[in-house]
Structures are given as C-alpha cells and as structure tokens.
Image (cartoon, rainbow, N blue to C red; front, side, top):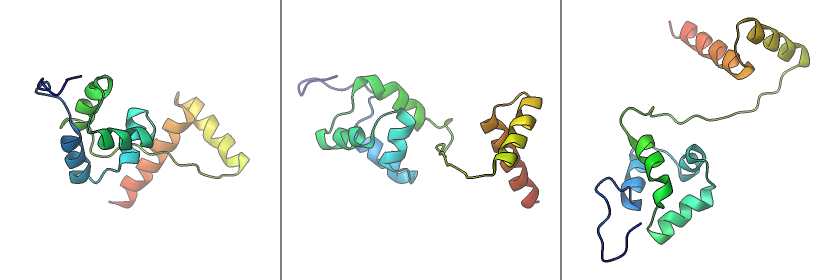
Length: 116
C-alpha cells in the first residue's frame, strides 16, 4: 500500500492499467473477479476507490503477463441422462482422469476433428 505522498512500486497494477488491460482483452470485471476468487463487487470497489489491494497484486500481474492464456476459464452445467454420465465416469476412471478432464478432452478432440 502507498500513501498520497509515496510513489507506488514500479510493477504496481493500478485501476487505470487494469481497466485498459480488461478492455484490450475483452474481459469483464466479473471474469477477472472469478479468476481472482473474489466477488464482482470487490472489483467494482477497486475502481470506485482507485486502489487495488497489495494482496492481489501478484495474482493480477500473473493474469496480465504475456505467458498467461488470453482466455479465462469458464464453467458450464450440462444436463445429461444418468446412463450417459455413468458411461463418462467409467471411461474417465479407466483412463485415470477426473470426469471434468475426460469431458474436456472429449470436447476438445471433437472440435479438432471438426476443424480438419
């Protein structure tokens, strides 16, 4: 944290930098809040107060770094028959994957196949 008489650290992410980065990458405040594990209202408060707490600076710098994926992860709920889910669970266990990992691999595989 810094006072009005002190200068922020050179790698300090202020609301101007964060706002510009969000805009450039078409990322909403809700998405960055989820990625940081905070409520959207917390991010709104940062912008209202023009101050981002020190305890999230490292996480923000990581998210904003060039080596971080440009897409933030999202979660969806999908309805499926119990018999389908049971088959997915069996296959995931057989391959040593979690259900989520197996489904993601299956979806990505189908997308690659369709794009060829």
